[in-house]
Structure formats: C-alpha cells, structure tokens
Length: 626
Ligand code: G6P
Image (cartoon, rainbow, N blue to C red; front, side):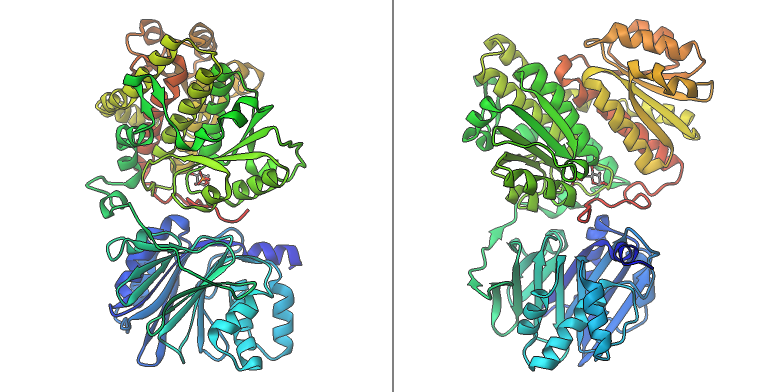
C-alpha cells in the first residue's frame, strides 16, 4: 500500500465522549455515543477504568452492537472514554475501532481527526521496538505519548504535550493513564471538543449533547489548547505549543434535553421537518420586526458597509448548505443587485481562486465544523476577504473563524439528512438580501414591508402544509420502488430541485438528479420513459409558463409527473399525474415552501423502503475531514 493510500485509510471522523467523576461511567458513555452517532456509525468502543484495570470493548457496527458486546461483562468504573467512528477508506473493523492502548497497556486514547505524519512516527517507534496491532494513526499517537513518557520519565500531561508538538494534522483526543486514574488529558487542533463541568465531575465530548442532563456549564476548547481534568486539582487549560496556562472560559448552554430527543416522532428527520414552523420563527425572532418595518441583524450591523461596497459575494458550503447558498445567489442578485458566486468549498479552496479585500465570503454550515468549508474561509481570510458565517451550531469552529455572522437558531439537527437547517439558512439569507436591498434603496418601502410581512407568515403556511402530509405519503407509496427520479425547477426553485434530489438519494438510495427545467432537453430528456418519475417544482409566480412547457415535454415522452404547485393551480392539475399544493407567496420566498413536500416525500419513501432514515449508510452529519 502506497503512503497516500495508507494515509487515506486512516482518515476518520468520529464522535468522542469521556467521563471522570463519581457516577457510573458506562451508561453515560453509551448514551453519549448514541447522541454522537450522527458523526459516524461504522464502529464503536469504550474503555472503563475499574479496580486498577482497563476494560476495553470495541465492535464494528453501531453503538447497539457495542452494547451487545459489553453485555454481561464488567461495566463498572467511574472513569471512561468512548468513541464512535466513521471511516472514509478501508473496512471498519473491531481492531481499528477506538479506544487504542499503548504497548504497555497503561495509556488509553480516543481520537477524532487525522495524524498526517503518522507513517514517519510509526517507523521510528517500530525501530524502538513498539508493536502495532491496528492500521490506525491513533495507535501511533498513543504509543508516541508512551515513548515520550518512557524517555523523559515525565507526567502524562507533559508527554502528551511533547508528543502533540511532533504531530501534524487535526485531532481532538482524550487520553488517560491507568497509573494516574484521577485525571484525563484532552487536546484539540481542528476537530471540536467541549468539556462539561459538573460538581467534582467532568464530561468530554465532540458536542455538548452527551452531558446536557448533567450540567449546562461548558468549556469549548480553542484550537491548539489542551485541558486537564483532574479530580484533585480541577480543570486546567493550557496551550499545546507554548504550555501557557489559560483561564477556562465557562459558558452556560442554552440547549435543553427535549431539543435532542425524538419527542414522540418515529425519527429525528420527521421531527425536524415538523419543527420548521418553529425553527424558522426562532431564526427570525428579534431580527424580523415586520410591524416596525425593520430587519435588525446584530451580525450585519458592523459589516453593512462591507456588504454594500462588496465587489461580489462568494458563498461557500457543502451539501445541503451549498444548495441554500444557491438560493442565496438568486436572492442577493435579484433583490440587492450584488454579484454572487456560489462555490463548493472543496473546489474553491484548491483552485487558486482570485480573492480580494473587496470580496465578502459567506460560509454556510449547519455544523460549523465541515473541514472543507473551514479551510476555504481560512484561505479567503488570509487573502483579505471579509468572512460572514451562517452556522447553526453555536460556538462551532466556522462560527469562530469568521469576522461576523448570523446563527440560524434552528436548534440541534440530528437526522443526518438536513431539513430544518436548510430552511433556517434560507431564512437568514432572505433577511440579509432584503436588508441590503433596503439599505441600497433598491426596494420601495412598501415592497420591503410587504416582504417582511410575508416572510413572517411563512411558518404558519408551512404548518398548514404539514397537515396534508397524508397526500404526500400516498404519492410516496406510488413511487417508492422507482430506481431513478428527476427533479426539475427554474429560477429560485432550481436549487430546490437539487435539494429534493439530494434528499431522496441520501436516505432512500434511489438515484435522483436535480436539473434546471430548461436544461432537461440537453441530456436528461433521453432518460424519460413511462417508468421515470419527474418531480417538477412549479409555483405560480416565477417562470411558471416556461415550466409548464417543460412539463409538456416530459408528458410527451410518457414521463410520470408530480408537480409542486401553488394552491388553486388548475392548469398543472390537468397535465400532471399528481399535484401537491403549497400556499401562495412572493417568488423569492417560494423555496421555503416548495422544499417541505420534497423533504416529506423522501422521508416516506425511505421509511417504506426500510432504510435507516436518521443514519443513512455511508454518510455522516458532520464531515470534519476533507
Ligand atoms: C454532510 C451532511 C449534509 C450536510 C453537509 C454539509 O454531508 O450529511 O447533510 O449538508 O455535510 O454540512 P454542514 O454542517 O457544513 O452544513
């Protein structure tokens, strides 16, 4: 295996969780892993310290498989670390699962990220007599720490710091030494890590959800920091590079437990679809003051001038967030007359783009941790651009890397397929575009006011649409066995077509393509036959007549048409096999409505096909490696 292939084999992103205190660690860790499973679910493991011994259980598969593995075995102990893994290359296996132990068995470590120079370190360690059992870079790191400890006869804290200074890559780690069982050492560069601070107890996790029921006090580690949780000496934070001691900054979490539980719904995705009237309201709460004819966005305030004078706006994102960015392009160009480019973060960062200090880069990310988006904004920042973030997760890496921004406030999104985060992102983009149009004097006061009132009415309209879910479910039952689907839209609803197709692919594994309706005749039309479902997004305003012509072209080739239309549309009813109605609204706001039935449709089809809706195969919610 070449070095490159070997490196790829190690690329992982994962969820980590740890506990040190006075409670039984095992149930906390298992519950925590389940909450972090969205970060990866190929394999899982747990290490518990009990009676001077480490009990280590690891299993390929989901957390439930790990539980089965640990059943009937010693689950005691008040200290433990655990891990859920997502491998991009190489088969997940029991032996590659974390935690990993050092050769002496004294150190146990979990890791989220990648050690890029692991091969060189591994070779040096092998020369010094170390043995390796797995293919992971993590096993290299834990042994490197042990090697430093052996050579320098130093504490775990010092050895970890020295070892990390030799490492190139991204990581969030937690490590403990069974000879000093009152302490866990953690550190992060690139990958997220948060510490829950209770009374004489500490929690460690990739996000705060594993410890919400125990404490609301949290310390988000900054990049390049390590934290030592010691039952005798408390919590200490210091920098990895310089050993500088820092005051831990304790924040109070606003999240509650109910927001991360299913609340009676069969799946998180369904819950999150149904939450959209609330999540959109939460997103504009305090910002959209329709009665006063005002939009007040704290994040925009200081940077309005930058936006007004911007040469162009570059929007970067991945997946669904990129689709929201495309809606943003229509909004900013149409309403605020600012040129916009929408870029896949992964392409943007590597193609030597021309960036100037007159550019404003908007980074869109639900998790705020997507590696490509993070790298793209770091690059644009170095080139002098102003960076504005639209993130859902408060305190996330992207949120912290930006000059300014606006949180979406959609609440935790746990289903891997993004739903409420998308509509919240589009809501923020709509407010931004409207406000810039207003400031630039491009929209009359009455039109501006009309848009604000209309935006405010969107949650109620979505709530009304959700009442007709039974029809969407029926349509899903008709098309659940399709092998290919086409999604067509124009203008503001072209990105909705892309998003509709992505949703179906992600969770039902049916191949689907989104296309601008007019482009269909340049290729996809060749696919249309009497077996092909074609979902057409055709609200009354926009380029309705043109879409109707495109639909006729599908019909002429016997395609099966399902049209998303404005209430009362009789024309389309005559042409399409099925129509799904959405309430009337301004053209610029239609994506917020037309997206909803497509989310529901994908959801029902996936359920009917027996797919794991919340954790679709091969995907992860937070992609923290490139
Ligand atoms: C993953 C998720 C998608 C998400 C994308 C971008 O692929 O499965 O649902 O849209 O990452 O994530 P972000 O957190 O940056 O929005």
